[in-house]
Amino acid sequence: MEKIIELKSVTKKFDGVTALRNVSFSVNKGEVVGLIGDNGAGKSTLIKTLVGVHNPDDGSIEIHGKLVANWNALKARQAGIETVFQDKALCPQQSIVWNIFMGKELSYPFGFIRQREQIEVANKLIREIGFTSKLIDAESPVGNLSGGERQGVAIARALYNEAELIVLDEPTNNLSLNETQKVFDFIYNVKKSGRSVLFIGHNIYHVYDISDRFVILDRGEVIHMLSKEKVHTADDLMKIMRETIKGH
Image (tube, rainbow, N blue to C red; front, side, top):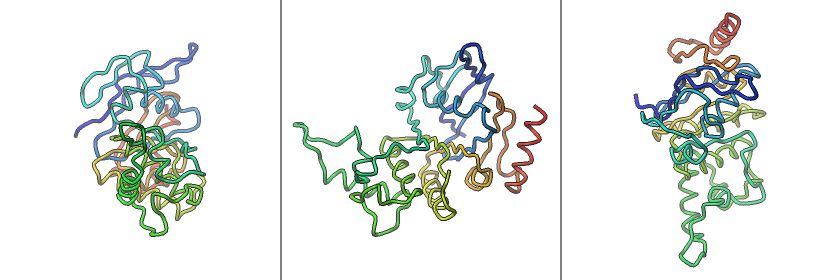
């Protein structure tokens, strides 16, 4: 199976404190990986390392099997790694199309925006990832959308940026069951397109429902990895997580 990104024995320290210790971790093409762990487990540091905010102090990072030196945010984006954080970084007062193209507008040689083309591209993107309501199109204000739909806009923006791997940080936090299902539908469609998702969440039931594989992090170390085939229910996953952390 083709690996989009692979961390090998990665260690990261801050002022003498080890935030990540010998972390080996990968995401394969076309899969959803659930990253779980208690508060302080090191999830934020791992995410920031994946997206190039942090360069490892030790260990290596490979993209599609090729070693990358001096890892940084630019190289991560060039590798097709995009992050949707909890705040989604959207402008509610603006339209969906404006939010998707923000900072990467299509323009003519003299700087005029190719508005019609942007609208067409945005409409195609939101339909591809699962927006079905005829009341929503590229020119709809983001402020009129639900929480789950706003996640969809952020995911569509990542796809416009040619993402191969989308890192979703707590995407279902504070969402109703209906809105959570909308987010799941968006993720399913991303996966169907051959792209990958790293799903970080505190809600074990949500992580279980959407993920193909699980990675358990504790105190900066990957302490367990297992496929969904080996876990029958979310309660089983929670039990495994607790027992693994307790024994670590």
